[in-house]
Image 1 (tube, one colour):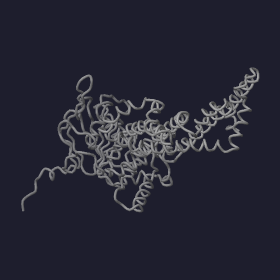
Image 2 (spheres, chains in turn green, red):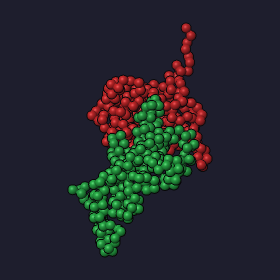
Image 3 (cartoon, one colour):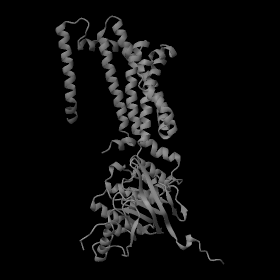
Image 4 (cartoon, chains in turn brown, green):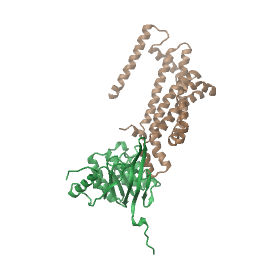
Length: 252
Length: 261
């Protein structure tokens, strides 16, 4: 009951927007802009012939590979930069310059280097999500409270124990925050990248639906599906925050 | 046979602090924190160091425990200069440092290097029971109360069998009742396990309750103002006249007149 009361207002807002949308389209007799019902039938049509799931699958695959690679590179790199001062001093300025460059700006270079296959969007996703995760992991190491490092020094534990039982678990909550940010950016970017370069994916679906006969019902269907999947991905990352090893961070 | 008369034999001090000084550079200039402090702590002795707040008690403790180096002078433990912290002397500070991401048992096993897992668990559980944490071994620190967290911290120190316990305002964050209870617990444990203890506190009553000797520090730059022996047998009755007299004398050294006699 309490859960229902919590989600009720947000459902009401969404319902209200759909109603207004419907009313405006009906009142203006627009032939291009679809009603909510047309969006639903358009989605069903795509789902029936299976192309919807192909597009979703293609986008998720690219995000999975690009984001996965970024995690594999960013977490060790961030730990290293956080722990070794020389590494931080050397690499941080470079990352601070690269970080504010929009992933969209990389599109021409991606096409030049990798053509219009799967590699380009994977590269763009990698580029977009690797920097926030490096930065967040580094910050995580830098913000480990001194008292814990002192305690570890006091007990004279080995370097392996220090990393396994102090540094890594202390940084893990920040790594997960970085992953949430990284995956969010990755999902934004996959759609943008697919709009330009490819023959599959949700971004391609949106642009292709517009180009091939002004199917705005499918444009909006694509947008809504992107939003819902983004919400789902963020929910998955939130599940990580509930893991036992990081729950201490969110207690109190 | 020649008579062995090396200084180490003549003064069998566990900890020997020899005229140390420490300054810090700040934006306002040099801050002289410690000025020529010398003191000795005997093996198995419990020494309390009291002083006004901000007098550099923690700086002194950091140097004695090996976390910081003095500008002048030296700290020796068993005649060997203390250059870095070691598990022979464990520091327990006010803020506490029980790892929040490890369970109580994992925390207790943390410092036990190079032993079989079974043996580690056994030792951890033994000390968890000693400090009254039996049944809480699988809990995480955020599931414990402040007093229990202190017990976990104490147990984690005891389990590595340190020769010295460095305690820097260990119970100051606790309420008065818990504070008293933890002091009694500490005394009970020190009866079972022999440790040399250096206790830093601003609480004169705590010092008299626990220590064999109380050292009073001055304000900055800090030096030793006076030393008092605490000749009373345990359990100490804090309200007794001689104890109150000693308390008044120590407070007087700290610049506070006490009228409660």
